[in-house]
Image 1 (cartoon, helix red, strand yellow):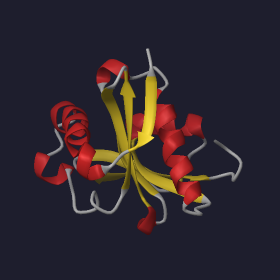
Image 2 (cartoon, helix red, strand yellow; image 1 turned 30 degrees about the vertical axis):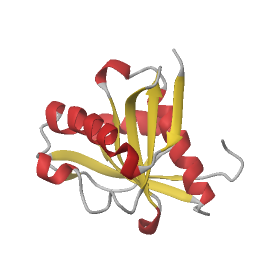
Image 3 (cartoon, helix red, strand yellow; image 1 turned 135 degrees about the horizontal axis):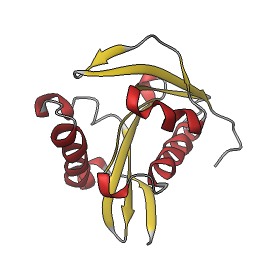
Length: 146
């Protein structure tokens, strides 16, 4: 199994990104399709993870919003394989490359343990976004991490 995680070209990779996010957020989690792709997509840095040259995971970071990581999605068939952590490591590299010293996200409550294993900590009370309970989580970035 050859895993590749790279910075995506949103224009070139939009169909792969859309397919993954639609499968995870719209089909699995019932997020309304009209709010899934948004106006921040064009200004965020996206990453794409592939296994044997097939796109299986994506995420984005909004540098202008202080390193907000979002739209992290891994196809169900590839969860618990380390791809999510590899995807996050790439997003963290992008953040450090832009001089950020911390990142943050709105994590679904079900994903809190995943983010905690990466070093994130809850920094808000629960709130509902897209009909799903979330919390804000933040993590400092060490300059030397990969």
